[in-house]
Length: 185
Image 1: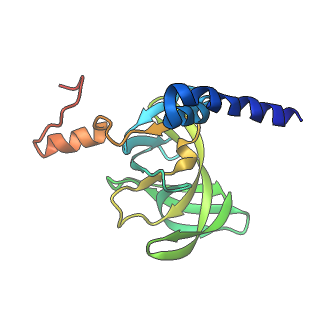
Image 2: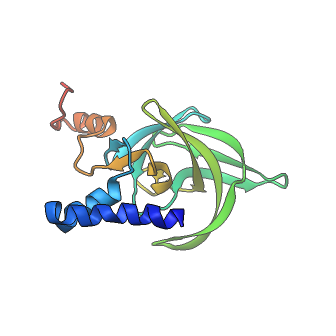
């Protein structure tokens, strides 16, 4: 009964907002009323995986449910641990051992495959977050780390037109085509 009252109370915002804001405004009031502050990130970010002490260039992918990280030499041990080597885009590598969190079949454009998942800490600026990440050879892809919705959830929103990230800015400087970036001269 209490749940029904809460739902009814939230839905009443729609009816109040419709004449004032129209349908889109009512949807915004209803959908985003309880979000709280979120940090805006661009389509790419630079993050650190503290357990490995490695920095990663990462693609933020709202279409991916979970995070995927570049790993090689992935071996499941009999004691429930996973041995693997993490590699970032500049060739740094670190041997790791983590408890297996889960296994799942992942569907990609190249087909389906079974992947092992581990819990990793991802640090963006000063914020650290534990995420479930699948271990995958991403060496043929542009970014060694793909941050999925499990990383975004509750903390971040994506602005695809955001200012260039430090990585994009450095790449543009290397190509001698400096992008406009407020505060970076």
